[in-house]
Amino acid sequence: MRFRIDRILLIGIITLFVAACGKDPSGDIAFKRGEVPDEVFEDFVTQETDSGRAKWKLTAPLANRYNAKNLVLMDKPKIEFYGDGGELQTTLTSDKGEYYENTRDMLAYGNVVVVSIDGDVLETDSLLWVNARDKIISNCFVKLTRGKDVITGIGLECDHDLSSVDIKENVKATIIEEEESQDE
Image (spheres, rainbow, N blue to C red):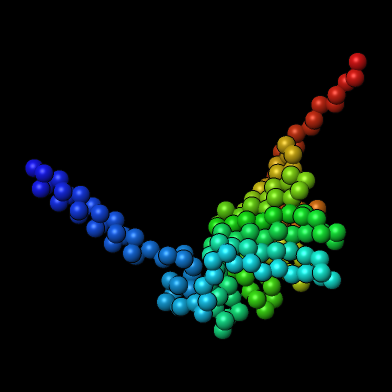
């Protein structure tokens, strides 16, 4: 009986190992197509500055660079956007990201969340941040939460700090009016 339990346990471990071997260790699309990155980074960091002030800073715990495509594929990217005075304004996170080195644009996908310092939260499946225009664009379902108010729709264009948001289609809103406090 002991031999049978050990054999079943061994078969289970081998099955798990074989299943894990078939998984893409980096999770990126290029790896699935058989492409090998030119460089692999742990704790990837890049940023853009203007006159010594940070405009944005992009980090990722793991990134693969493909030089011929000017492309960096990232796991769990995080980009922080800064104001003219160098203050943090917004943080964008996602499961995966593609950073295009020639344009400095970033495609974020998988549980994309953008949080402003004012507490506004934008959620979507994917979005593109266009560096030259300093705009966030999405063609997916989006949800914007401002305090207790929630606005949803399809497609969006907004500033990186979520100050000006244009939701394109099927806009629905739930607005919660706050009760006025009465001083007695």
